[in-house]
Amino acid sequence: MTTTKHETEIKADERVPTIEIIREFDAAPEQVFRAHVDPELFAQWVGPRSLTTRITKWDARTGGEWAFANDRDGEEIATFFGSYHEVRPHERIVWTFTYEGEPDGVALETLTFEELPGGRTRLRVLSVVEDFETRDGILASGMDVGVKEGYDKLDELLTKGA
Image (cartoon, rainbow, N blue to C red; front, side, top):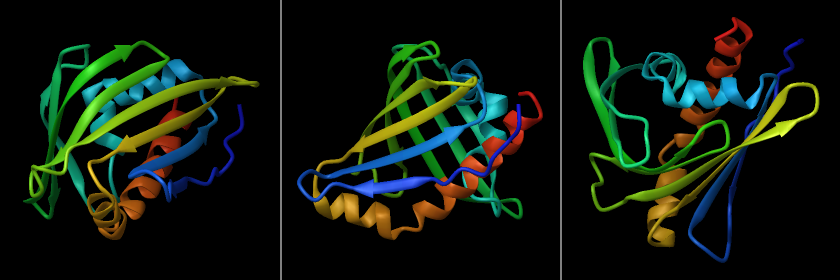
């Protein structure tokens, strides 16, 4: 399987306060899904290259919860947490996603892992927030850098056979 550089598409709907992220991977849905539920793998790819991720809580099952911290040069700079509402192996994850610095800005995210020809996957993430102000604040936060660099790191991890 050859690895191709895929672009990460980030879209904001003008009518509803959502963010949609679409990215294709040259790996099977099982592999991409596993990288989202295995805490050791997740910590290796999530977020921008300038940060490291430390998992502080991880129970990747329907009804479970998760939390992680981002560190830069040994100093904690951000913490995120949420709960798993549905974990359907290789198909779908529904979870809440909250930045500790904005505890009222909870997003409900649905991740779907669509099988494509050639053993590839299209990942779709739909994030729904309370209002446009929250959505626009997330978009303005620089989240696109973390998402794009994170998915590039995930590509690298999947190429190594994770």
